[in-house]
Image (cartoon, rainbow, N blue to C red; front, side, top):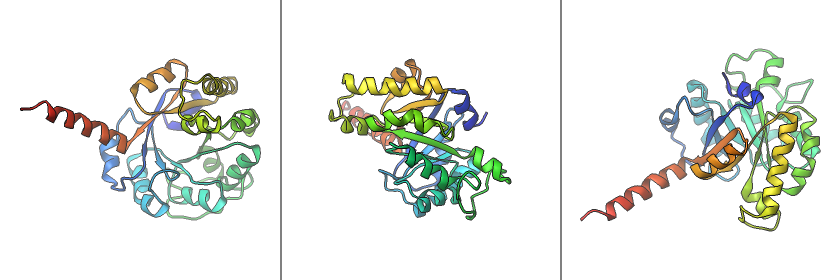
Length: 249
């Protein structure tokens, strides 16, 4: 079953992040029956469209769904991501219906949108029809502020979002409670997003740093399990080795 089908069914899906490592062999090492998708972080990572092109092509070869977290909502930026072979986009800081309109217009072919046709990897994966492209390319909205929460129901009225992911760090900042992840205001906001997604039967998730957070939010009903990054995995293993070396005579 492919990623979009799992999202539609609100099944458990697991993804992690590539932020900085540009070696495409990393994807061959990461490929696993457990991994449902990889997010390439163009917003906060050091990846660029140029440096990530080979990574996206490798994902196509290995059949690993590639989701790009874009830097901004603009036609020229978002449209090009799909020209390079991405299977979907994660749109950060979404707050208004107008922003969602711009996203849909930028990444869907007419009549749904205004995306142009071009790019070597645009129609990979057996996509040959306009209808297939418009229905199979994934859009995930990242909700990171009280305004985004208040407008989420209307944003989902478009029925174009395949999932919603909460950004807890930026949401805590927007609420004026930086990194207070157990603050009642933040937890109430997260609960509201989950409630809306449940009512609309839309997949929902939250970024997690570690296994404990993944376990907690899965127990709460979230099905998109997005956790850590290639640098996070490296740092954890490195710290463990350093701690072990200290124990030796």
